[in-house]
Image 1 (cartoon, rainbow over the protein chains, first blue to last red):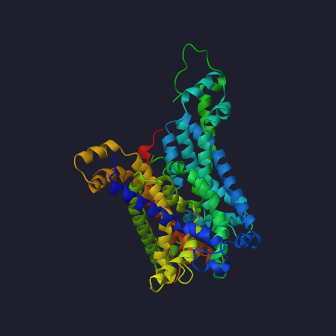
Image 2 (spheres, each protein chain N blue to C red):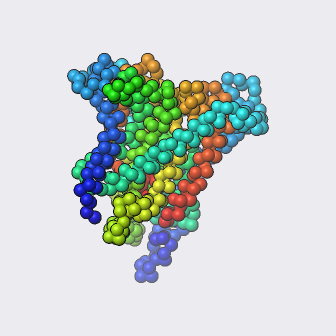
Image 3 (tube, rainbow over the protein chains, first blue to last red):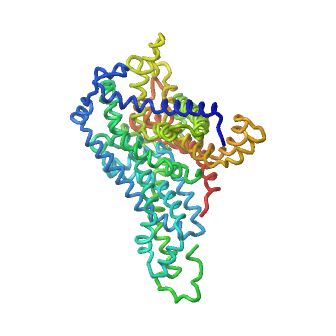
Length: 271
Length: 307
């Protein structure tokens, strides 16, 4: 359909206008992170850029420890979720039974349980089990939290793997284990990769359990940034530097996984 | 259903391992770990929450124990804070849904047009969704909305106006603005995907028949989007009912209880006042609220599911 010049002009104005408005807070944070603490309190656009805040965040706040926690927890939980989900999705996609449909929908419904509804028991279980403020504790929670999404996404990908190939492998005498390892895994590697990416994004940004179940040793970046909320912590440039570093890697991941995000977050309901 | 089909007569009998019953058992074995952990993850905390909600259980007052009957619930519904928190929860939900669904639909239509730099603009527009909630909340509160140092204040002064102290004067609206900023990109992303699947020939035909842009939008695009919109509404509802981090780092539920939603109330009961029983009763209410929505969401998704 040919757009009239007016439509085109409107699309440019509204499209770019909305994009710049929505992106402005992020851009402003990055900009402020290069200001000195004194300059950060004025909304000046022109200033002498400095890396002072980044140095301070690294030196004083032990930024790397929090970042490392985020990395370990996100990757650990993603790996754990995948380890559980790959066999399950395989079984449901290639050996469906009468119960498969119900199982999938039930898995989805566990995702609907509001975290705050089970905060008390989880907190007490963690306290009694010595899991409070440990990385392994968050790994378990995040893996369970994302398991339904991960199973669903893998299931969708497996559904697209041509059955003939597996059939051929089975004819050649491949056992179930071999079938998964040598045939299915290579075929669905792109699917596993993008599923993992989505899981990483969700783990990295999770801020309910991380705020409630960690304090110092296992606190990831979401909790570290929250420590800037105290009134004494009103150091805008340092807040901006820490925020920029916390957000940048996952923002790039997010840009690459837009499509999978739609599939994963709507459970295939919108394609 | 590859397993169920009988082996071709021509082929030699399959080895024992590949026989049918083995595969079915193997299938169960592969599925079992996920089902078991999810079942535990769902049942154990749920039963504990229910159980605690009928118990006297306070971590700072260990002498008071035992069966409480409906006391925790009675205490909850006679607490004015509870009703305020319920109201705030619903206001946040309704306001954010309105902004994100209306804004997301309009932006999806805009981003479906071809214009220079569209892909870059789209990437910029969806970026807020990938920002962690604690960062969004603090950046908005300090860098943008701070009356003295923030950008909004500077703009107001530029126009000769008095800067607004957003979190003091309009605390709930401020929280809503932050949450809407986070979720608008989500709505845009989902709805854009749905708009792109719209058949262009249909719109072309409508245009030939003399339908204007507005009529096309209301009679073709919007009906086509209705399913995607309902999915967006339901998924956002699940998350928006329990907004927490944004409130935790900006207002801590205040001033007073102006921004206390149900999630924050439960958190305060449990981890600040150590009232396990009372917090659990609140938790049960949150679970019921979420399940009303979840019921429709699961049904709607199930209709599309092909196994």
